[in-house]
Length: 225
Ligand code: ADP
Ligand code: NI
Image (cartoon, rainbow, N blue to C red; front, side, top):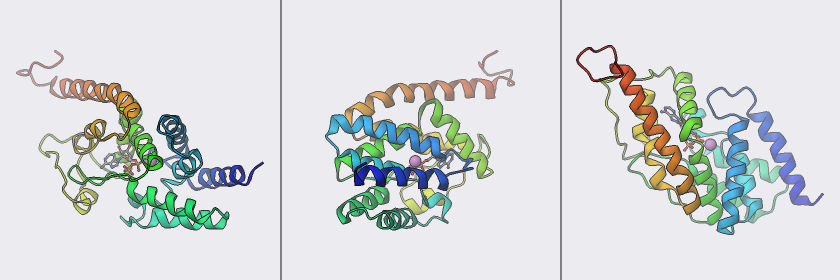
């Protein structure tokens, strides 16, 4: 087995161990899907599959959402791990840089990726936040934070800074407007945009049905009857 294959194998075992028992939609299977999708997108973009796979595997280890909002914890954990398995310096820098830039930071905050490797990992992570799986993950995460499903008196906010986005604690339905419905138009690659399109429409249908059911008890609404 080549040295690179060994580093990938070790990293996978490390990440599986780190994400055991995760109940907020940031579990091993999320990482597994992101890796598969990122490698699929990488072929069209001539992205280096080694960097893509390492970044996908490590992208949610020590995520800021679970580290008191500290955005440096994720890239630092990746750097420390890759140094421990003797990855080369350029790979360590590249993977840490991708992880530092990856996260959504608010409706009004651009999150540009500077390399094709970063572009495909970000697209893959965002594809997993939308569609049927995205809906399931949003409610799993919201539940883990004690957030209500929906509150018609609490309007969505378009956050213009990462600080505001992170500190928001609104109902999960608002998260669709604050993030999930914005992701289709923020995909970096054409292939991801195509996949995002049908997942986006599925979420819109879900929200429309949710609304009909919410209003069904109201005799003056034209709900589901
Ligand atoms: P990112 O780094 O862009 O936040 P992640 O891979 O860490 O992406 O996953 C984000 C997941 O967490 C998404 O599925 C998203 O729906 C969920 N999530 C994040 N914030 C919220 C929130 N405020 N309400 C509901 N779900 C959330
Ligand atoms: Ni992720």
